[in-house]
Image: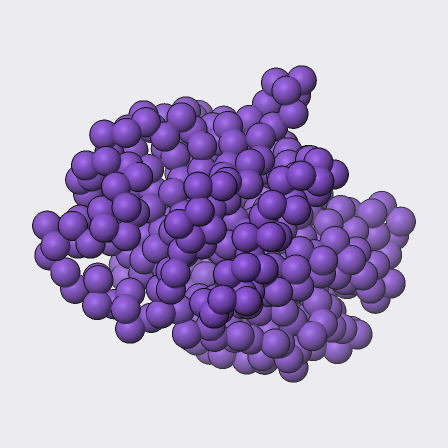
Length: 412
């Protein structure tokens, strides 16, 4: 049976698209959130004998057929390997995969560009751009095939209690799920994280990202551009020939002002802001806006509980690396759980969760904090900040260790 035609065997659907609870509400692991990281985590446990529930407030149909949301995910080669191991990579149509052959970082009106290119002998691109909705769709198809995974759609979590003995999750329909481990994967504003008593540094930046696809007359040569301009940041992500995803980061009130423009006025404004870099443009999608919020949880684990993805770390999108860190976090936790099971330990073993937290913190903290410093520098527009940006880009360009290190991290 093909993935595209498989029947949903592991969820009980109501007429309204939700799910009915059965009499057996005891699980080894309850995952809250069926975004791409939560689904990846469930898929990573497919070879185990663990009974897993995935709770999602959205309907089954919205998960099976996710709408295009404007977001293109820049996948590293490590993330591609993970998706391939899970069986999801080959489910994504080739037409939705856009190779990234390089990146350029610009500062204001300067003609200088900091260049990032894949090593000449690697034979691989710097990364691959894939629509967020296609990743979600592919992972959902994989999880639907798992005998011991149960999808509980149309429900939100209203309470969660945890101790060394296990966890209890209460859903909006009154059902109570018991688990040896509860895993929060429900966004950077995670309600489950709050219910578990885990605090977080949440920074609402006062800016929003306005995203759309555009067709344009000038070739992009599969090169991404990150352009730190005065009072705005523009990212141009190359897709199919003659098409790019354009991301404009502005103060939120300015972003919503542009969102209200009609298409002709909006395109005129885009052309002016891009200084004609792409030539004549036409819209190829709806416009989408997302407020910018960064998150760093104070802890990534609690008794019989763990955080993955944005619930643990919500990166600034300027890194284009948030999903890759999230995918890595679920993989680290899944490996720890599988090792604990082989050793005859509990899936919520405190030592295993401590090791998971320590490794994730060590791997993600440098990029998270460096990004915050970078964003702070580029959000200021006084003369000293502009000079520091210019000198910083020049320094990075002339110190190969810096450029090659970043390129290697992207290719890792």
